[in-house]
Amino acid sequence: MTKYIAIEYIHEDNILYTESKEFKDLYEIIKMISEKYPNKKHYMTLSEGDDKYIIKFNEDDNNYFIVQEV
Image (cartoon, rainbow, N blue to C red):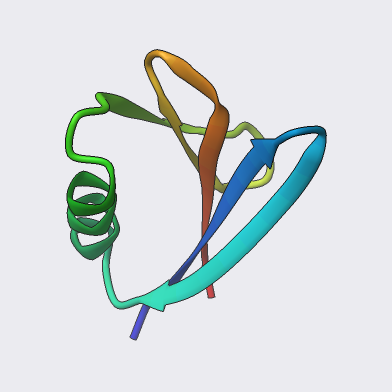
């Protein structure tokens, strides 16, 4: 069974914070992001070679997620 780990990166005051959580599918990750950041639009891309998904916000470069199959 495929599981995913989502690592959230938050850059604030020149400090990088991380938080990770495991999910059973990509839908749960998108739902969590939409609930945690309801007023921010986001998009997802696939990194080349690493097979990791990168989720970024349209107007916020200080927060992003890296999602990887585990």
